[in-house]
Amino acid sequence: MDLHFPIELKKSVIAGTGAYALKAITAKKKIGNMTGEIISYKEAQKRVKKQPGNVLFMVEFDNDDIALDASVNSNELRFINHSCDPNVYMRRAYQKVEYYALRNIKKGEELTCDYGETHHEGTLPCKCGAMNCRGFI
Ligand SMILES: [Zn+2]
Image (cartoon, rainbow, N blue to C red; front, top):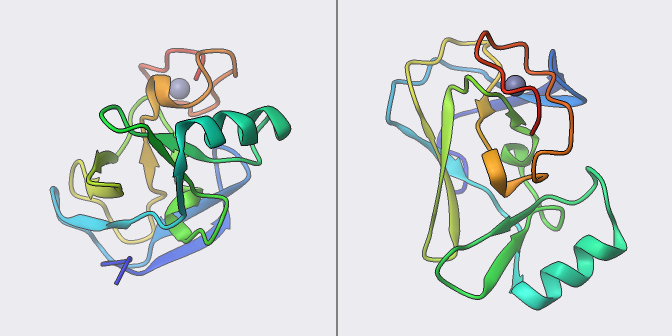
């Protein structure tokens, strides 16, 4: 099973569609795996070039020469928005992209993750609204 907690998709307070916890999640609990297609790093670069912007959600793995294209066969976790003050963290290991609760998350809270450099290389203005917002993603 890819989702360990029920997640609801609805309009985000940050950007576009957001992922919301339908149940309280205790800190450090695994929320689930992000589904997608495992492809080579080369193929990932090709796809990113073809479709710039927010449509694609590509996760690169540091150790292997692969990436996960989460715009294919994606699940709710693909809609977790970036925040500079997140409540979720992402772990990439063994060709899996796992999400864990960084702290206790209340029922109805929007799930957010600090995608840092993995995302847009600091060129997109950040709208997360956190006190410690870095201003760019
Ligand atoms: Zn921010």
